[in-house]
Amino acid sequence: MPLRARVADLRQTNLAARRLFIGRALVAALVVLLAFLGVTARMAYLQVLNHEHFSLLSDQNRVRLVPLPPTRGQIFDRKGVLLAGNLTSFHLDITPEQVGGHAAMDALLEDLRGLIELSDGEIARFKRLVRRSSRSIGVPLRFNLTEDEMARVAVNQFRLPGVDVRNDLTRVYPQGQHLAHVVGYVGRIDEAELARLDPADYSGSSHIGKIGVERSYEELLRGKVGWQQVETNAQGRVIRVLESTPPVAGRNIYLSIDSHVQRVAEQVLIDAGFLGAIVAIDPRNGEVIAMASNPGYDPNPFVNGIDAKSFKALNTSPDRPLFNRALRGMYPPGSTVKPFYGLAGVELKERERYSATFCPGYFQLPGQEHKFRDWRRGGHGRVDLDRAITESCDVYYYQLALDLGIERMHDFMSQFGFGRLTGIDLRGEKSGLMPSPAWKRRTYNQAWFPGDTISAGIGQGYVLTTPLQLANATAALAMGGKHFQPRVVHALEDQATRTTTVLQPQPLPPIPVVERRNWDAVVAFMTHVVHTERGTAFRAMGRGAQYRIAAKTGTAQVFTLGQNEKYDASRLKDELLDHALFIAFAPAEAPRIAIAVIAENGGHGGSVAAPLAKQVMDAYLEAYP
Image (cartoon, rainbow, N blue to C red; front, top):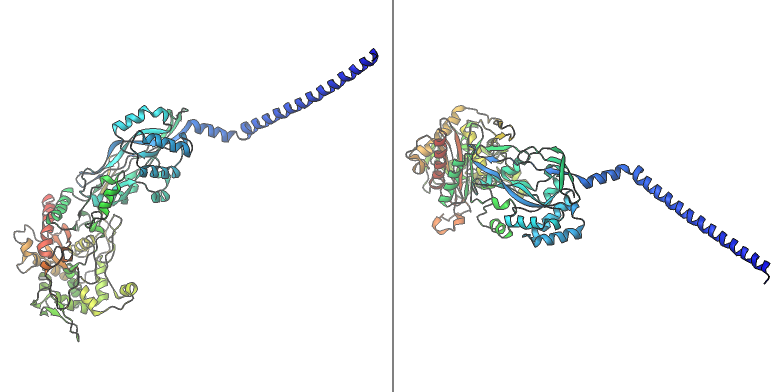
């Protein structure tokens, strides 16, 4: 090929290569420009448009809020004996956001299981709390760590993200079973409680009052949560405190109950060997002096979770130690209602104080053969209200009940609180039952019969009352119709200022009095129960009494005898024996204590329940002369 042609061809090749290079350079420059524009736009999006959002996320990574749980208020008896206090303990918390996802949390829990004892129940409860709580707040996993467990966690903490051992206070009940039914206990917050509680009120806390004073006064006892805003490093360690709001400690509570008198009430039931309850009230202001329920239980194991075996033993025991008989036990009051019905008879003009009824030992409705028997088989002869109360004549009250009628009986007894809640400052109270025809129709869709009225006239049949209700009604009788809402809390104390606020009595509408002499007569006849030889409580407590007592014995049947059957205690099982009841107030002329006693399957109220009441009244009146 000629030289000129070869040169021309080379020029064409160079020109094509230059064009290809320029095109590729332009494309590369365009790609770089687009990438630059994309990066710039992304930076603008992150740094300008979403500056506030990512700034907040950045702050949360290094600044977090830590709740400061308040010190729970303590519970004391009237004289300052500690009943519920706080003891320093150590527990293990995990902050979820420092751990990661579910897989990381499961791996961490497995690691911890190799260091400390963890039950499946504790892990399940922890996971429920994690789902309900903020991920930035520590969630308790284990309570009451031993020194060895704390040491093992501390040595391995470098590989345990989010794990922290905290020094905290745990609830303790130094008196054990003593006053357990009244004070109650705290326990771990369960799932149902988590759903209804405001998380802000319980941040950093894992326990809540379950029963008794602990539950009823939960809002005052728990205090208010404080907060700290802290700066942390990458490992979650606190570097410094930025801001702090201190917690407000819960208020201390002083009960109206005297621990010594309460111990006497508990012990006499134990020594006598009966299940039952004793309630004593100051009739002048409604304050509860003692509220004993036998058997009791130790509340301490419930604080951090009682084991399943122990709980089952308590829950399935035939003696029902967890059941507060004083507040929730409902029993036929038996003859203890007779002073109230007697008062109704004279106040409603169905009886004169000394008008007589003949008692042959039984009572029959006109035209019927069925005999309603008196407890004394030979009868009492001619009986007025004095003898009817003193000797507890049933026949007198059979006829009186028919003359009054169930409607008037219901209305009169309701004024004393029978069949109604007393309104005591403890949750879980039962109302008892004062029946009426409307109640029976509503409950059983049945008519009311005269036999129902006769049974109600001696505190049997459908009539039911709680020991608290019976003591409260006795207090109203002692005060001539003046009565108060019962309560167990006497005073509140501010932990910061140590100022004490004494709660004022809450008077209830007075029971109207038609004739004061009727009330005075009933009280006088009740003193004859104890202080005359024909009284049903004379042998048990009348001899040598240092003060005058107005009282009434009671015996309540557990089952119904056939018409021709005779009650023979020696041939019956213990659970079929009659309940023994007793009510009283003293001193009769200026009452300072009103009391009700129920000894389940105790037999006769005069010989069994009356001595128990006497020991409690002695203890109180000696301590407060």
